[in-house]
Image (cartoon, rainbow, N blue to C red; front, side, top):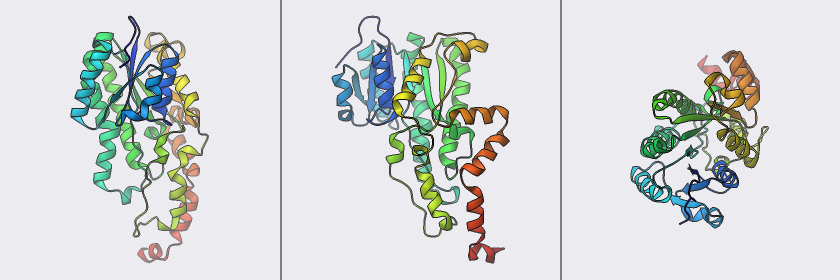
Length: 302
């Protein structure tokens, strides 16, 4: 197993399967001279990273025992000192709110929210020793009405709320928290098994829009993972500054990047009504209302 050189900073990244954001983040931190500890449920998929000199560790972020084993193994690698933890592992969830399955929802929150909480608790000893940095990967969906993505939006909004408070609670220990408000970026999430509309769904008349929405993030101003990773890593390594100077001259607390990120930031800054208005048109709401309004079953209910 590869180990860091004396004085070399270490970074642990979750969800590093090839083709995804985590994989590109590993490559970029490695290029910048940090010792990368890449993780995945099946570490054999990380053979390319191992050949480059990175450490690879098996980790299922939804399994407490797997996290404990990884913590102990990583402590052997880095001597109990972790400079950066990137909580990247995530799960997509596109389904109308009226059609969701609660066990499926719980699985999404386990991966997108509870796993981050578990990783922070498990590795806080190593982060405090290094006075390190936690990077939690959230999404623009946390502040926008991402059509048919209510569960995903809720999970990413939870990451933002958790991180905002975590930042205060960890400040006395010298551990910092950065949140990535990620825009549309090429990733593996769009290739995950897609959910389908049940036969009795009230949205059957707009099934084509639902299917269009399933791959929205991969077809709308989508940024490649390499470009995104380079900017995220560069900003995470910028020096610390006082709060009022940080976003301009230092490491940002909130990192807005990826496709549509600039528009979402601008709208969010002006007011939620701007984001709502933009989303109304972006997600074809006039077409949806027209088609559903033409449904005989809906007319009968009226």
